[in-house]
Amino acid sequence: MGTLLIYWFDHLQDSQNPLLVQPGQRHAWFKTKQQAIKACWTILFIAEAYLSIQCLNLHELLYGSILLLALFGYLFLHKKMKRIFILEKEILIAILYVAAVLFAVYMQLILTYNSYTFFAFFLLASILFFTCLQNLFSIAIIESNADENAQIKNITHSFGASRLQRLQAAMLLLQVFLSLLIYVIFPNPISQKACTMLFSISALNFLLPFLFPEPKNEVYRLIGDGIFILAFLI
Image (cartoon, rainbow, N blue to C red; front, side):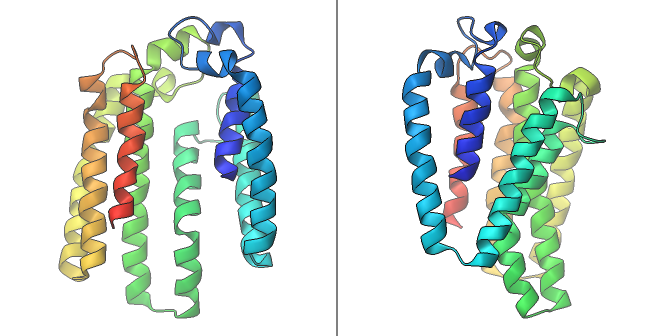
């Protein structure tokens, strides 16, 4: 919920830029519906603050706050800098996403340290990271021209769309290798199911730029982001 609030806050800010509110631009909705979104934002913020205080212990609350502050800080710095240190925005977002998803699992592993389990955790974290990058890179490729016209920073502007697609293909092959490694070394049904599910998500995201070469509508985003719901089947 906190990540959603920051996402909405960032897009509400961007929607004030006239370059982003032309018909067909993905921020136009935030411009036309900004009063309703601000009201929903306020309600969600109050709800999140209440639930956090009531349901989380001090350690969980502290970590969640640090992660959200890091994400908010990134969005602020990204508006002022071409890159965040040496990282493109897509790479940093993937790192933050993986950290958010796997932190609870990591904390449980610390309590019962086992090198065998930690290696499996590292492999799964790497596969999740590559899956996130597939999504972010494909959306960046599709929106490359639109982002350039709207003066939005995009990894394709510094790396090149064709090179990025070759990198995506290499990541897909590496993900296959890591998945096979888990299948052979860690014959655990849950881990194997996770590998299969994440590879399916990666493969579909890899195909998005070929299926949707231009961002004419939001279908590519609904597919690319919505397919992550499959992870709940694990």
